[in-house]
Amino acid sequence: MAINNVNNGSPKAPIDNAKLNNQQSQAQTAVQQDVAAKNTHTTAPRQDSVSLTQSAQQLSQVQKKGTEAPVNQEKVDKLKKAIQSGEYKIDADSLAQKIARLEAQVFGLKP
Image 1 (cartoon, rainbow, N blue to C red):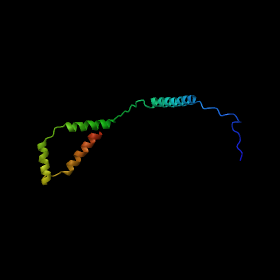
Image 2 (image 1 turned 180 degrees about the vertical axis):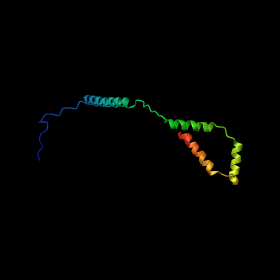
Image 3 (image 1 turned 60 degrees about the vertical axis):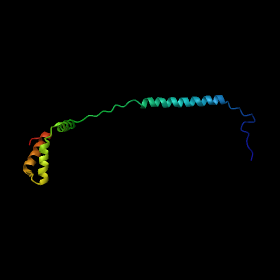
Image 4 (image 1 turned 135 degrees about the vertical axis):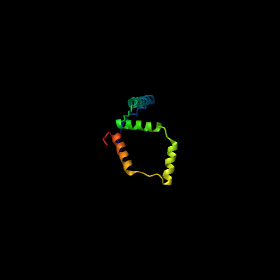
């Protein structure tokens, strides 16, 4: 099998290493500049925000007032003891009316 003469018989030109290194460093610099430019555009600080509905704000106020309210520990202990001993009786009708009244106040409805 015959091989064609690729260089037409002329000697191969020597590689200029300085020129090759210069081209490679220029290419690397260009890539680094592109990456830096993209990073400056994508690293801008993001501003997050939260907004609460009026109902959530009211609930937060109610919870805060509940934690700030004074507690009559003596009365709490007396009720615990009555419940544990079975002496405390619950009036279901009265409780249902009070729950309905509370829900009406919370949701702005008429009882």
